[in-house]
Image (cartoon, rainbow, N blue to C red; front, side, top):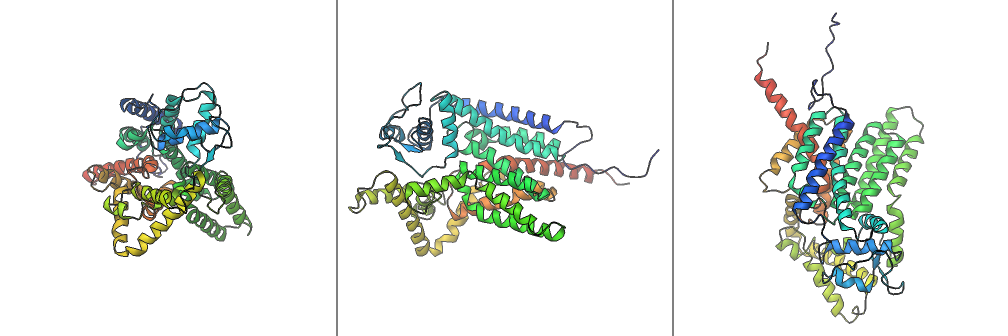
Length: 453
């Protein structure tokens, strides 16, 4: 007997015939993505290869090894040939110090997350580059699976499975999968943080605040680029909690305790590291030296000539000037790093002051390169994602993703852009909402083609 009550509408991207549990959907997406990324790493010839000579990869590897050997976060003099790309890391079966404590030079240039992962592997099996690359592929696939699981739990099962397929085919994710860089771990951490932030926006309780803050500190621990998000996110969480307090009957101190829980959790990993940086630099430079050194090429003639893309040209020139200046020529190690950062930041401020007419154009170039303007297929991906974000706009995860995409764009515009490294960690979320948007579009077209009545 019919009650006359219509069944609740299904979310776009689901089907009444599709009965797949969220856990199964997430696991299927993880396996598919992992297989794709392992195949891509093998195809690119890096799955069993040592770190790329003379770049970031060698630097991360040496930092991890020295951490595992007990020396700390820095380099030995004998690391220089490896860092310059003139030699491979020496074979060893044990993580033993390669220099004395007196000769060891700490650094505050790199974020610590990925080197700590390398150190953990080296403690078990030193210099097992293949294992680290496989773990990186797993992290990248894990970032995709986290988004898929979240969408499936919200009823978008078909979209979750579709985004698993498109992420497995994504040329950027396949390009960075397994590399000896921070992209893979950052992709996992960024996906977890987007989900955690979305959960907090919906629940607004203390547990979700701690989870969100913990995900944020992990993300910044892996990639210091995101440190600029702290002020905005703290203000956002405070506003959300205060508005929720006005609508509820909670005590006046409840929302402040929840805010404190978020803030403390968001500093759990980063605050000890910031204190360490201030100690080794003997200066109030909590985030280290990378930002000051890198920003020199974010606002410079080299950035202008490269149409917004980062190169190390200006930073290299500043380093050479420091070495040739009698007043600073004796600086070595962390002292040189500190001066390099100070002069890099000063050079960027001076360029901005002297080139106000070029600033807007340079900023636009960075933004357009971040979003791959000129690409043939990215407009379809980003357009479908925009539709998906609109369709699911009432969901906390959608609002969180939109905020992070905005913050990511603003941070690149205010700093620098380098290849496609700053959008890659958000690509699983972009693909997830693109899948929702594509399915919503198909559903809308089918309905419009069915005659009414």
